[in-house]
Structures are given as structure tokens and as C-alpha cells.
Amino acid sequence: MRLASFRTAQGASYGAVTNQGIVDLGRRLGNRYSDLRALLERSGLEEARKAAGSSADYKESEVTWLPVIPNPGKIVCVGLNYEEHRQETGRDKTEQPALFLRLAESQVGHQQPILRPRESKNLDYEAEIALVIGRAGRRISQQDSWNHIAGYSCYNDGSVRDWQRHTIQWTAGKNFARTGGFGPWMVTADEIPAGTLLTLSCRLNGERMQHASTEQMIFKIPKLIEYISSFTTLAPGDVIVTGTPGGVGARRNPPVWMKPGDKVEVEIDKVGVLVNTIGED
Image (cartoon, rainbow, N blue to C red; front, side):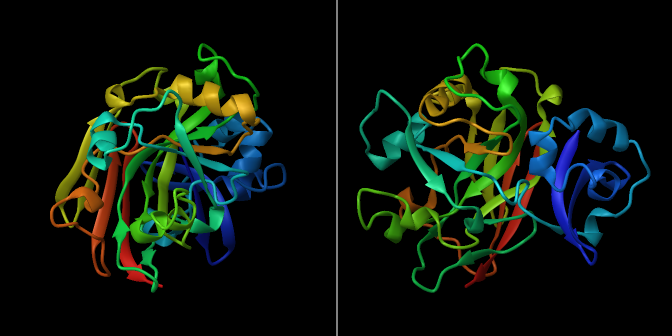
């Protein structure tokens, strides 16, 4: 099942994306689940699956896509998690994952513009696989980690590189408003068995800039969930963004920056394609 958040003239909602269009689950289930995060918190996936068989309410072209989870409790991002990317940055290997946080307001949905801030021209792309948590847990074992994933989505961890490098902390460069793409939807975990090899790619104006598979992750998904849940409780609707492969624009010669008018695509097989244009803030 593909689940997405969106907006129409009637307001914000969420639904199931089918071959016939979008089934508005917010309208059908809204008295019990106000949004997609609430659906996950209250274990409503089975109800959603039954309702998803209803007639479509909208064509995809009739909605404005929102980030898959517009209001996550936390967004935990993993840095330097593919060996090729670690090498191109010149960073040392670490024994544990490098983590940073994003804010919800830094995200945009599918087909919405990622905004280059007026403070910088160094806006970079980062194709990543996002995990949406579906079951709460603290100190989750690697063996049990897959049971806590509700689904998978595409993520573009747009980075304002000069601001990222102002200090040894990355927070500023990773949190400008509307710089991170998240979508179009999440594919529920029952459709992607535990340990499935996933490939991800980034295309800028049609040219492939990044390509890798989960096999190349330094810290695999079970390790990430185990490590993160050691210090914080993972809650339904939380998002883990699992790292980007090599080929980022900052490490090219000359550097390649996203600029207004560009089109950037993040594709994950078995999930879909996240498409954003670049605008200006």
C-alpha cells in the first residue's frame, strides 16, 4: 500500500495512492485518525488497507503533495553512511553512525519547489532512503528492528553547504526552510520484506548524479534503529533518513549546485520517484 499526505481545496488530508487515483482516507477514517501520523500511532493500517479498496476520490494531478509525514515528532538523519561518500568528503571512519536532526519545516512534498535560500548559492542534493517508524520502541534490538518500520520513502536531504561548514556542527546547513524533499508516498513495509536490497538514484536535469544500493551502507538499517533507539524512544511517525551515496555536487570538480529552474529526482526501486523543482526563497 502507498500512503501519502496531501492538500486539496477542502484542506489537508491523507490517503492511499492506487492505480485508479487517490482514496481520501482522511475523509473516510478522519473521525478516528486525524492524519497519517495518528493512523500509525493508533495502529490503523489494517483499517486503511480495507478502505483503500474504495473508489478513488482524486487524480494525482488534483492534489498538492505534502511531506509524507508533515508533522513528525523527530527526523533523525544519518551522515557519511556510504563508503564512497565518506571517501569523497575525506572524513575518518567512525565506530558509530554520525547523526543530525532536521526540523519539520525544512521539508516539502513531491512536486513542490525546494527553495534555494537568499543567503547562499551552494544548495546541494542528497538522495536518501527514509524509514517511517510504525511501532514505538526504546533499545530496539537489531533482530527486532524490522518490526518497527511502517514503510519506506524517498528523501532529498537538500544541504546548504557553506552554512553546513560554518562550524563542525551541520544543523544550520541542513535546516533552511523547504530544502528537504520527502515523498511522494511511503510504501508500507509488508510490500518490501525485511532485508530487501534497495537501489537509489539522484538525477539532476535528467543526468544521473548518484546511484547506489543498501548493500553499500556502512551502517545497515537494523544497526541504525538499534543505535538511535538506544538514546531516544522511536515513536510512530518518526522518520530516519539513512544517508546519501557518493556523487554529491559539492565534491565534483567544478562543484555542481542546484539552481532555480532545475529539476531533481530521487528514485528508489520498489518505492517510487520523488520530483522537485528548484525555486528561490
